[in-house]
Image 1 (cartoon, helix red, strand yellow):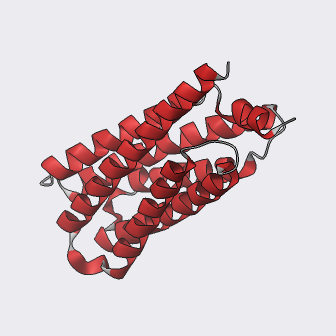
Image 2: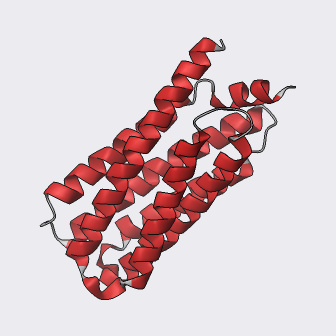
Length: 187
């Protein structure tokens, strides 16, 4: 099986999942940037829903990879971490600003690391992998900023999360559209 065949197997039909993840991130970013006044509990729940949706879509990608006998476990792990982070946020909304800060930082760090690893694997196969690399770097930057400044308050965390989610969503949406174009051109 050639490298383009592997990428086609991984990515064909998955551009829509990446696009849905991107649109969810953009929506979260817009809400967080333009409506920062909600209570911390509401912010925690919004983050929890996003993390669970993101985790489910990552698991969908892992299952498709497993069916094709490809390397699937990193996406599965990313999905499980996302679902766990989201469940904690939803079922324990009173965990407090400090716990939320470190929960967001850990989630963003793990997500960023897996996205960078995926970009490195794809660099020899498709063009545009740098978009996934940028998305991973944005995740890690968010993780570092949130971990370094945990006491800055919920409002700043909401804005950081909003800016991150919006930028990540835009980059991921461009990647999804490029994958869609590539998939249709190589079908």
